[in-house]
Image (cartoon, rainbow, N blue to C red):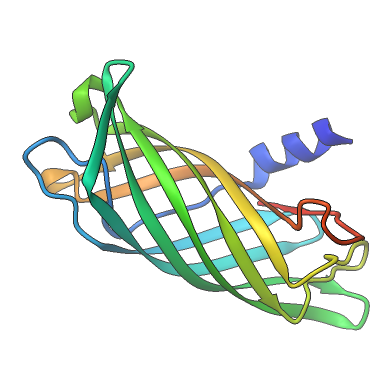
Length: 178
């Protein structure tokens, strides 16, 4: 079952993180706060729409594996929507977390890899025709590969796999992948 979920995530987990770069900019370019828009899709005609802001950790950076690692806080609002037993269902989402980006070539490459974790609160509890999240409060984690472009690499695109679940703290715990 996990391989089916993983393949679905890989096929449907396109997330466009578009407006501005929060962290891991080339040396000499100060990291600045940014706004972003994110869209995701999953099985059962499930969609995610998110707007958020990232706030860089201005005084934290680390050289690692020939690249630069920097981090940022991520605050977001959004909505998950899916087909439910009584028609289309919507859950409003509020989330916060931390993310780390590794950028090769001592931070000068336009390519990067990102990993992040945090918490999401959904109201009402998210439910589709085949599953119901066990709680409103869920852990969220993601892995992404991205590319920066534009003047001073100020814009970025990401392909992301994202998972939310309550970590088994409450049953049921089907999780949701985008």
